[in-house]
Length: 126
Image (cartoon, rainbow, N blue to C red):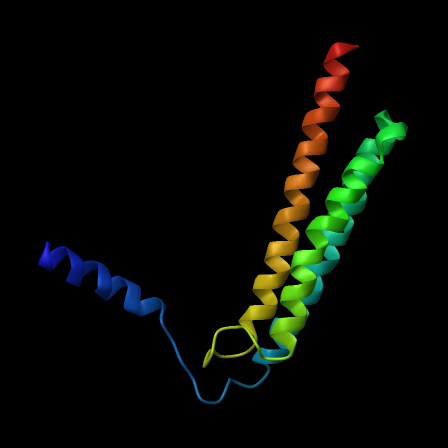
């Protein structure tokens, strides 16, 4: 047991890093990656709304509320990370911004998957 813990801890230590001065251009790269993730999540959210609009216009409010409700959580995280309240301390760049973008993209992708599931279920009944 003792050796397995040492073995696992040795692999976990490779993922840990701290830097005092971020490499040049890393913060800008993280900001660009965040912008790309948010743009992709916006496109996916519009696609999810379009899928529902295509087959059931009267219940378009369901994915609209889901998109708005899920967008609220990443927005709060974005503001808290921007003010420096949360986020990985001592890490290089702005990985918290990238994580907020990934949360937003993952949530909207889950909404899109749900809408596609409902669409195929609706098409199968026809």
